[in-house]
Image (cartoon, rainbow, N blue to C red; front, top):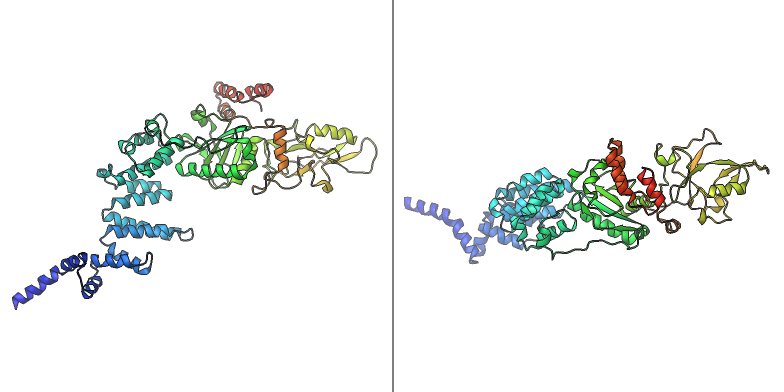
Length: 520
């Protein structure tokens, strides 16, 4: 009796190993397989999982059971949930993906370390990504996973603006010895976007070449160098530039080089959603000598798009329409929507024309119509485009004397003609308290344009204005911004240095002299 009990106990103990071997050797009966499956033997579960439809309830159930001991199954579930993420279920599905990646890590999967860190990085959870990467084994630095760890560490350093760490990591023997396409692509990007300067990486991978420019005409009015603070944004900039070049008529007037990297640590910006983006523009001194363009632009994660003199600011959510609108300001166009009450262009009647499309003039005049017309047209930059038969003054009374009163503006029946039409630009600043001295902003066209609504077309009539006077109202070079910022901080000597730099971008001798003296 005792020996029989021992036999039963020991055969029960060895049964899993026996059945597993039989299954692995493909030498099992239906009954044995059913028994193994019912008792969750890994070998049987794997066979059944291979037959299951990817993503089916059965597939998920089997992998959940396998993931208790098999890191590969935990990884499969992590990939599955990560792959079906939608905007509507972002948090829930990502939480499931994270849970299974963490289980795979508990089962000692180094691949899961990389995958989870990458997921955190994509979500902008940089601290969590760094913490996860610390779980990677130093022994893996020479294999494929080690390459992935190193590449992600470089991407994180780029995102954080840690230029010294970027340079250190990019000189790694592991990176230099890589032949994997993903790693080579990262190396090419670092070279392309000027992330690494004066590094051997540029020589070691000289055969990994990409275009120096993403398009733009050779005969352009201005040059614009765009900057971003991480790889994702740099690649987004390239897409935006390509869209701009293909869809926007203003592209023919702007030379756009390949976007360039700037460390977030080099900047000091206020950038909040729905608020105008502003930066300490003295910081641009650090890169000015490396930039061969009249204007520069910076894209950040959020912040209201705007142009300040020679610098364009915008965020990653801005479309090619918005970008085109802002570029138009660099070329000398002013917004046709209501500007802020304290906007410089709306503080009173202009002394001379200052833009292609806006003139700030008195609303009412008195005197001889022909003389008034001649006088007014001298103060309107688009005067040559106004047909001599298109009225710009409307009578306010029935008098016939030379003291007759007039209201400035092209009549409604000429709304389809280039004329002097009321613009909303200065409606927050101009006052109607005194009708004889009040002023308004006026524009060439009565219809809405891209200067009013981003999604509208940039009108052909405005393109003609650019062709007639291409550099007349160009914003000064970004060096002027640096000079102004330094002057406001009391650094007069340094400001003069940058004014001279700004003046070098002016072809007109008079404009050059004005800029050197700090004027516009």
